[in-house]
Image (tube, rainbow, N blue to C red; front, side, top):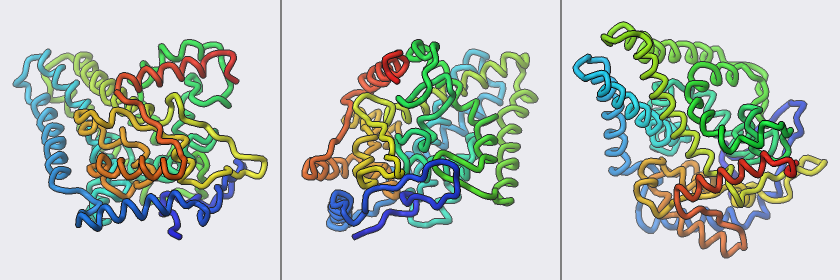
Length: 376
């Protein structure tokens, strides 16, 4: 029987939080079965699990657009309205880097070469985030404790957003299905200027505990942040021939697009109707194996829409991503058929929203439900 990867193992922790354990892996026939079938697909077709030519072309296009829009904006060759439109496009391309390139690279799925993954993972720092913090909060915490209250940090954002049924209910939550999207727009601004610093120096990140903070990573945090602030704050304010407040408006608008895009994609995978928010028993145990848990807490959306598939970095195939984080997202559309059939064979759910806007509507309804006084 195969064991989980390092990303999937429950990290050792010394923490006041309840330690969560899962059902015995040796009893998880679904995990073994789905891994065997997916492995057979790659072997029989002589396909690498990592990036292919299509993925490389996609990477070049996104990075070229990202650099090109930035250079055009600071060139002063475009009208103010043209620069504003380019800023919005740049914000969207920034989100595309995070979803398509940085995300795969930090998971180690872009290439089989760890060094090259590390280099490509720096694109995450290039868009203002921190690869070290993300590797813990996402790769370890979210992927291990998916939708488990007080352990999965992704379902515990600002207190003003109630995204799981055990969170304390405030009167204002009844309106969260309306104002939540405004906070999603602020997601990348918070990430770049506040969230990374707060999370970096927290000993407890969800269900994961760190006693110390690596000095090397502390230096990297401040160096890369300084580079980002220089390129995307100082340089525009110095170079662009416009009043400072118009430049700041463009920067904020770009972040609104970036934040909304990334937040929506991640929210539609777990905070959506049909997904579960399991609580461990008194002994801290979840009465199912880790892989089975993923099938109850994760949902796909719009997987038959080629535009969504291309832009979302495969994160609309969230089930496949959680089961196979070491497989490049470019392959998810193919292996999804295998995963769906294997889940059916093991009588496990395969949650899915057929369309992108249908998923947004479902997410909105769940936010409304979690804001209602009857949901405690």
